[in-house]
Image (tube, rainbow, N blue to C red; front, side):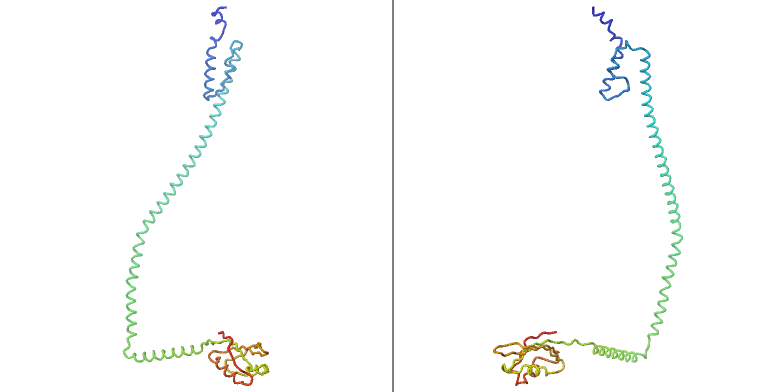
Length: 272
């Protein structure tokens, strides 16, 4: 069989448009472009065994699929357009409300500006009249007070009255100061009273010491403290007022009991 006979029997040249369409779709698919057409395998199949009714059915399927996708896109666009129209209407309404509010505010401001100049002159005039009239009344009162204070024959009486008031105030102050309680200073004194020997009656010695009584003297607790060799000393506490009783007075009064007391010493002295 010759080459011409092979070409006559092969149907590739008769189906060339279909092969070109398949090649175009292949490259569009590689570039990201999708179509709802038949697969490449179907396009590459020969058209001998395919009848005309089948081809017409395929074409109808393609048109219906393309129409369905187009209809879905149109419904989306319609819904978006409706939403945009609603938003636009709401914005127009808000703008109209703001314009009405601004117009009301402007009218209110114009009314207030017109009302200010009419009220201010009367207020200023009233203030001026008050300011002008007030000094006149004050001057009249001051003149009347000057006339009342002017007394040519009352100087001596005023001086005597002032001296009398001054004397009364000084007297009241001195009486008040005399009634004020005075803080009395007191001290706590601890005395050591030593006997002659161990045969001295310590009870009698303490009785002699406590017999010393005077204003501002108060005897407290006492105890016997051993000194040595059986001898004990009397340690006695007392509270005295500093202005009335001192340590010298206590020593002189206690040492008068010569039969029992040898000496008197101050063991402790504390201010209260």
